[in-house]
Amino acid sequence: MTLLQVRDLAVEFSTAEGLVRAVKGVDFDVERGRTLGIVGESGSGKSVTSLAVMGLHRGAEVTGSVDFDGTELIGAPDETVRRLRGRRMAMIFQDALTALHPYFTIGDQIAEAHREHFGSSRRTAWARAVEVLGDVGIPEPARRAGEYPHQFSGGMRQRAMIALALSCEPELIIADEPTTALDVTVQAQVLDLLMKLKEERGLGIIMITHDLGVIARVADDVLVMYGGSAVEQADADALFTAPRHPYTRGLLDSLPRLDAGGAQGEETALRAIPGSPPSLLSPPAGCAFHPRCPLYAAAPQAACTDARPPLVQVAPSGHRSACVHPEVASPC
Ligand code: ADP
Ligand code: MG
Image (spheres, rainbow, N blue to C red):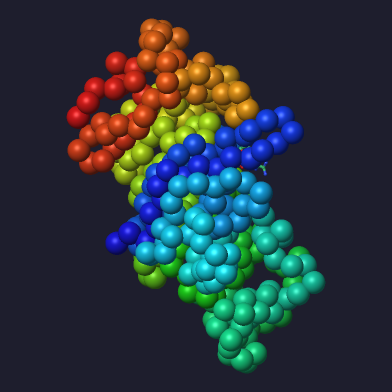
């Protein structure tokens, strides 16, 4: 069941240097009980996209459509979006210390959010705070609810932020690099927790990350962004087994592999994609990826530089890719 439907979403910032087109017409759906992974290098427009969904851009030109369970949010009164935010859709960030207030206990902050959205009594709100802290696997939740953020470890703080997001029983959670600051073991635990909550509560989740390893672990559907555009969209299986866009292939090649070559357990060197992400102030003509594209380098096509390639369906499953190079652009 579709919870969130985003169509032709575009975000532009007017800056002293000129117009920054950070997101250029992106489409995606989030289904209840599924995780959409949005992946791309730093600066590809992932966070700007998620903030646009949450109605959190001030001073930016946001166009297109964001339909949350039948309510259009673009152009809606501030009050409409504010009532949904924190209540039916919530966000989790990389850095819990910026999301949590240092001078209030964890329990007070969760209880306060509950009171604000449900008008509950102090006692009910506190009980709810202790309950959700337990739900996210914080030991001794009744005691730890009385502690301050700095008394929590990094992993426990991320859990507390998830508890804060969950306290009002949202239907959609947007997690923007929620585990980037954590070590690998704790990262896996936090991702597993999110997946468990998705299954148990039928949440729709948007998982934003620069790390395809995170996508492989949690995503059902994937949107690959490059320079503010979607360059590939597919279900996770199709993306990993039959990637079509050379950018996605480059990202996959740069994943450390445990199974290929080298002594057992030894990671082969990370092959990052050569070159750097495009300037959004003066992006390359045509396909923004063409200056870094191995297919273009090997066999340049006029179509690569004439116009930005549209996303077209390349497999019946709905797999879509925005590459016009003949080597990968065979129609379905
Ligand atoms: P990421 O994919 O790493 O999350 P972002 O969505 O944060 O990337 O940023 C995409 C681009 O938009 C970046 O080039 C960033 O500099 C630009 N950008 C983001 N916010 C603003 C702003 N308020 N004003 C101007 N440019 C911005
Ligand atoms: Mg970001």
